Length: 215
Ligand code: AP5
Ligand code: ZN
Image 1 (cartoon, rainbow, N blue to C red):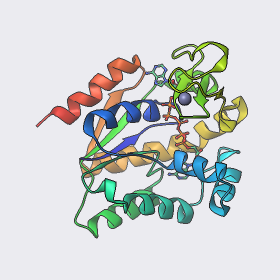
Image 2: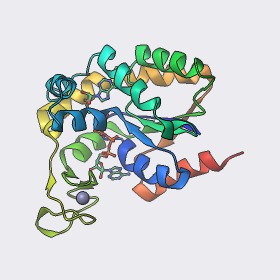
Image 3: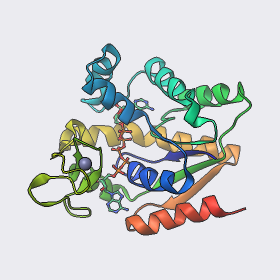
Image 4: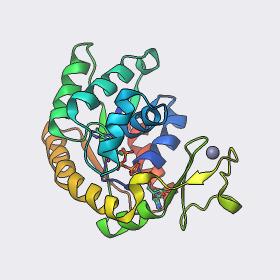
């Protein structure tokens, strides 16, 4: 099954993706995670991407489309994949469609995880991530273990550089119109489903699994 999770920053795409891929046995592909890994490894691409990410801007399409296609070409994507954070504009959506069509593939589900915008700011500024295993926490909704240590690996739990309040506001601004355009595009194509991402994490997962279980 080939899936796209659409949604504004903080909608819960990453949180849900990690749960869903365990059920569907497909890889979770997050362009944000790929960029953060490259930045951590201090590759040329990673350092270039980091400069954009730190200000909340989008990384240019020529870099982003390349990194997404390289990941999709790996053998674990043969039976399906879940894309999180890609595509993020119409140009990337068109590039993805052409790339998949060249190998006779298409997207099966585009799911827009819609969340009341008032919640997004709080979710992002309260998010904490494990520097060891990448697990996601929230100071109010998903607390980590005591003394800032990860529940699953014991790693140090930190705040993402782009989750500072001013960068969060910029990210929401930049992504709003683009996400609406993408939702309209996939609606016209007939592949869009909208779910309520404002509910509790378990409820959102339930909505998603229902869609994937439908014949
Ligand atoms: P990326 O890493 O993709 O960030 P994003 O899209 O801004 O999305 P987030 O990861 O912030 O949000 P999420 O929806 O995954 O929320 P999460 O599940 O963590 O991209 C980062 C940057 O990389 C971009 O700004 C850009 O520069 C660059 N980039 C990436 N892709 C690109 C592309 N295609 N083109 C160009 N540039 C690109 O949840 C958030 C918080 O809420 C967590 O603390 C979580 O615990 C909590 N939470 C989640 N669900 C719930 C719930 N139901 N109830 C309560 N709390 C919840
Ligand atoms: Zn961890």
